[in-house]
Image 1 (tube, helix red, strand yellow):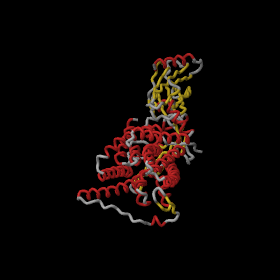
Image 2 (cartoon, each protein chain N blue to C red):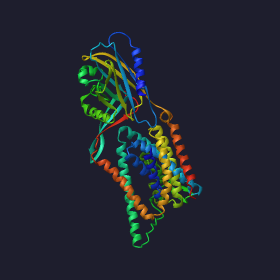
Image 3 (cartoon, rainbow over the protein chains, first blue to last red):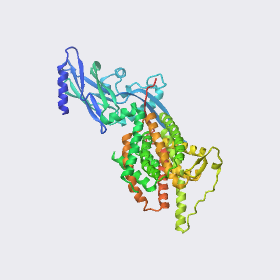
Image 4 (cartoon, each protein chain N blue to C red):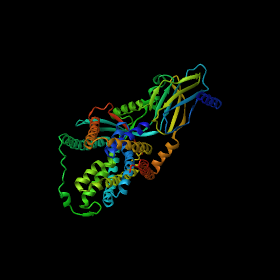
Length: 251
Length: 296
């Protein structure tokens, strides 16, 4: 099934190829990911074609998948009078809720630090902005950035891997796993093509992760009509309680 | 999902067996199993309302509810739970909710468990030695009865100041909304010993108060913190209702003082578990907290 979809996507890409200098086209296997109540994660495959590739030249490719921006408080526990209490914290603003970087070779071989910085390539170059701090990547908050990256990586929400395979000279593919806890919203997949360390083409595609069915209904109900949602919860509680009493009546 | 169902069942079994609401066991159980305290507490509120409803109706039909007293209690209780939800919300956004919840549970459960254990131990020792348990004969008047604003509660044959009634309702509503407990295990003894409500009226009236305050707490949590999970709540309710049936039967085979002794040990164990969570060095000192809303 996946192979068929992949081939169909590739056929579409190749057919749409314009003729000029190198160009890049990418396609995502499932442009919308649906989160149902039993969602356990999903595999996303990104296909790409380097168009008008010069024969014999080796290209390096990078794919970055970024989830919707979030504001996250990173807190640190400290021992106060024998008890561990959340003490210091930093809030990182507009940081992606999901970040996956896939490369055809180790990133440092592909792009120099300046390019990585410019295009926010790699978790080290995400450009952290902290609430109440003017400087990007303020060194006083490095401790919290490290903790943030570690926890996100442990939760499989942030990842970096040299895991892009070429199907033909200029046709590549990579698979990215979205965990069950992946955030809902708009994702962007950006493909980069490098030739001898120089960026020659870049392209971006959008992917959406949506709740569907009952999951979506309940979420939107609880957010948009919180008061009615509360009333409904109470009505359900009273009904279940009453029903239980009727079913198991002892007197 | 099945684990949740099972937890609801287990707590329902215990609450049926010991004749307690079970919120103070269910909420910690959910927290210990990894559900965020904010969600656990808000979701247990409708579960407590559900598990108290059928019993409240039964007592009401038997005429064992003092509606006037219940009204005073639940108006105060609703106000208390609004305060509780407000404090909950402030603590949640400042990242201190888990700490305050743990500390409160340690304080509350260790004192209640400790009192129950000594009482049960005394009763068991007395029974062993063949002595009758001395019935505590409360004096007719305490300082409570000297307070102004006296009101007559005809059903309970009480003429008492409304100040302690409102104070009690406020306190229970506050604790209930903030900690995810019905508060019956505090309310019932307080009504008996402080207000001198006759025992035949106590349970029915306190159940009505619990259903009402937990319903209010559910709505307020849904509006303010949006942490009520109805799917989780439904699983807990169904498990709880079924578990309670078996628990009641099991409870009838054990003697009252031993039952109370067991319950007090259980309560103390939960308190110790919270305390351990506070004092041992955490494996992970850092935590991430997704903030809602935009920041400038």
